[in-house]
Image (cartoon, rainbow, N blue to C red; front, top):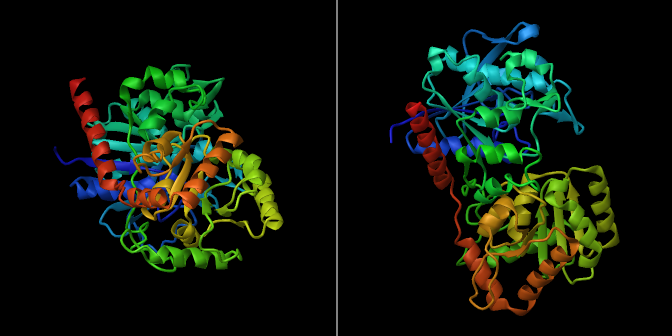
Length: 492
C-alpha cells in the first residue's frame, strides 16, 4: 500500500504523561506504524510534568493561533521532540493557562471545571498545527473524548480547507465510560455553529457530548479489542451510546492492543531480582522469595502467590474483590496488591493487610519496579474487571508465566483461553458472572490446579509464555482501517 501521512492526537503519551492505557497505545503504535514505512507524527499537550530538558524538546519558531470563539484567539507555543528509541516526531502544545497544572484531567480526583475548553482548545490546536507545518495528513488518528472534536471540526470548520481535502479520521475508543459531557455553552467555544447541537450529533440531555460528536463524524471508529467492540453495542457496556454505536456499526472495528516486550519480558527485564524464561524458570522462584521478603510475607515457595496491579476503581472489580476477600483469606494462599484509587478501597485493603499479615500485603500507590516484581514473582494474577476494553496486565502476566485469573470481558476474554485439564491446553482461568461466588470459585479452581495438578500448571505456564501480542500485529490492523477510510473517502 502507499505510504501514509498519519497525525496521531492524544491527551497522554508514554513516556511523557500517563494515566491509563491510552498513553501506552499512543507511545507504542506510532513506532510500529513507522516501522511499516508510514510518516507518523504525534501531538499532545505540554503538561508541567513533561520535562523539556529531560526529553530535549526544542521550541518551534513562531506561535500557534487557536480561535476559541468568545475567548478570542489564544496563542500557544509548540515544542518538538521524538518518541524515545525512534525517529517519530512528537509535537507538544504549550498553553500554561490550560496545561500548566499538576494533573492531566483532575486534581485530587476532582475533574478540572474547564476540561471542555482545555480539550476543545487542544483539538483545534492540532488542526492549526497541521496547517503551520504544511502537513497534509491522510489520516488524523484521534483518541477518546479529549480529541473527539477533531472529526467534528474537520467536517465543519475545516470542511473546505485545502490543507485537509484528502484527510480522513479514525476515532479510537479506549474507554467508553468517559465521554466528555459538558454544559452546552461549550458549543460557542467549539465554534461549529449551533445547527450541530442536535440529538443526531453533539447534543445529549441539553448538554454537549464530545465523544458522541466524534463517533458521528469520524470516518471510522474502533475499540481496543474485538470483544469490547461487540460489548459497547450493548446496554451493559454502552454507557448510553449503544444505540448510536449500533447505528454506526458499519464503521466500527476492533483492534487488540499490543505490548512492548522490550520492557515486559522476564528474559530482559532489568527491574526484577533474577531473569528467567521458558526453558530456565529458576529465576521465577528467586523473584517470588524476593517479593515475599519485600512485603514481609512468610517465605514459602510452595504457597500459591496471587498478584494484583491496577487502579482501585469500580471498573476493575474491586467491589467484587472486597466482597470475596474474607472468604479468600480462608484459603492457603498469599495475595500482593499494588494500586491506588477510590479512598474506601485504599482503606479497606490496608485493613485486610493488618488482619492477615501472613496472607495479604498491599502497597497503596504505584511503583513501576514493584509492578514488574509482582508480575515476575506471582504464580497467578487476578483481574476481576467489570469491563476491560483491552487490559495489558493479563498479557504481561502470560509472558512471565504468571497465570491470569480473569473475568471474561473485553480484551480479557480475547487474550485468555480457559484451562482444559483433559488436553492440558489454555492459558488461564476465566469466570463469567460478576459475582463474588464466581470469583471465589475460580480462584479455588486455580489454586487446586497449582496444588494438585503440577503437570497441568506447568503446561499452562509454557502455553502462556509462548503467546505473543506484538504491536507490529496491531499496527497492521490499524493500517487496514486507514486503507478503508481512504478508499471510502475517494468513493465520495
